[in-house]
Image (cartoon, rainbow, N blue to C red; front, side, top):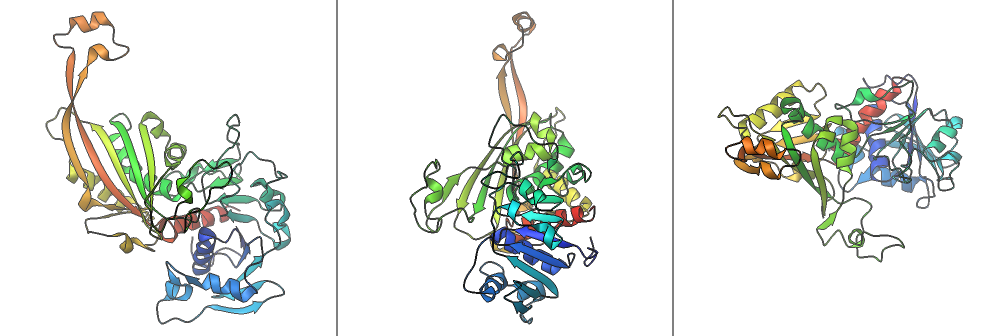
Length: 418
């Protein structure tokens, strides 16, 4: 995945919100693709210069040239051509399309685009046909793309429909090899939260196995996203979550996450574990935190699972990770320290790992499946099982540092198979 090895390939990006813009930043800096074609789907500002203004500046990460090359650098944008909708950014030609929103109307074929990253969050159902009136992921294929990467989990609206055989969900460093270039055309990169959670769970599953993990739960303390309102707003017709229409500037907001269901797609062993996932939105621009709580059955060896063991598991997994997606630290961090941290799916805050071991009392007479004649043979039908509860904290920059950079790795890996 070395820079400049794209052999003249072009990349299409559909959508120019947070993930779309930062995906452009990533690939401008990476230099794998020789040209990037971005579909905005509408006019923006008064000219191409206004689009360049938006692209170059970011309230979270600063100026594009400063982000890539440091504070002494100068603007990287030049050669704006209003007629062709093109500009040159750090040597990369970037073309902007502003006519159509429906993927089926984009005509990627005319721009020689084989690979598209859809960052709109609007086209998530792989079962919809390419000519669906509201637009469809398959419209990109109809328009000439060979592969479409989605920067969100798939969402099938008709629950009777099964996942399509040409669609797959992958997370780099977890199940990246599940992608089959001969079969898969639609690839979901899951979500930022699922990416972090998968890299938190995988080392523990590898060490303990699913049988020893009695249950698990997580809560993500999540930065604001573009789906939330700056000020209170009346919800649209049919909306059931009234809290997302409240001001993110002034509130801590309880919401939901699909991380639990998406996690099972990339780590099938999670089907064996009872798992609950919750999300809480807070008024920050990026960097989120997963609090993972696990109940682990102890062995009768006298040595219980403790903080040191959990730390050793993660420290070893981080050392063995060739991509650096998992970082383990004993330092004391705050969220601002994680902003832009490159390629870190999760940063385990080892300093805050906590464990507690206690006996759980179980009345076997109340356990389904145990026959009464067996219970009668026991001197005591009440057993005490040692269980350790572990609390683990994992940071992730839900925008550029974690999600977009790892999505960029996924994009390049797919491009190399085209």
